Length: 243
Image (cartoon, rainbow, N blue to C red; front, side, top):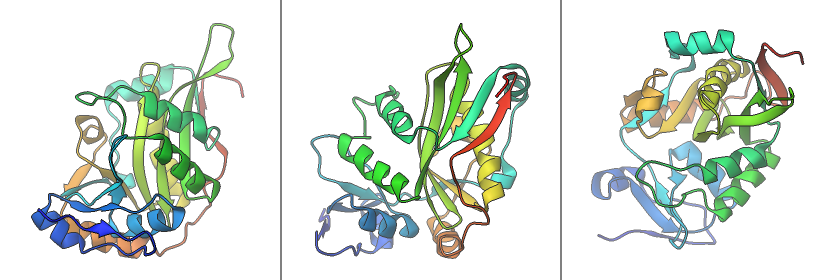
């Protein structure tokens, strides 16, 4: 199987359709994680995914798992948690801590992490440029001080949000963060959330799989549309806590 190699001096990617048909979605290897390359990849439905010691691998998975913000499903148990548990949810309060926690989170059937140090540096640069955002869920400790309990981060281009990873140090923390992040993103104008891969966790929130061609059509439209409201550092929600 011939795998295309990226030229460091060019930000162009090979044909995604060929990658899906012949290489199970592996578009190319090599290149770098510069902001310019990442911001070229995502609007085409391409994202980096590799482990330490491997070259940078670029993927475009089909079918694609997505979540339409207006279709988010909050189950009965989570609704009860959202009402009764004390918490605070913020956006962009501590991006470095969120991506570090995501990198450290154990994953079923995975050894190590795909969020390498170079990935952390690259997405932190995107955050500084306003294209990557974190959502934090904070729980009070025994003295009432807020501690980071869970969260998620992703890339935003136009009205698309590309979910990257989430973590939970305490029960339900990532679910609470996600449950508040989706409606907040919708208020800002996000029309579609790319979940990349199908998981039981995301399916419970209402994610669905769509053909890659349909995903590409949505990408072209949404990535070129400006947000209604900029995603800034912000208090998104709180419950049972004076802030």
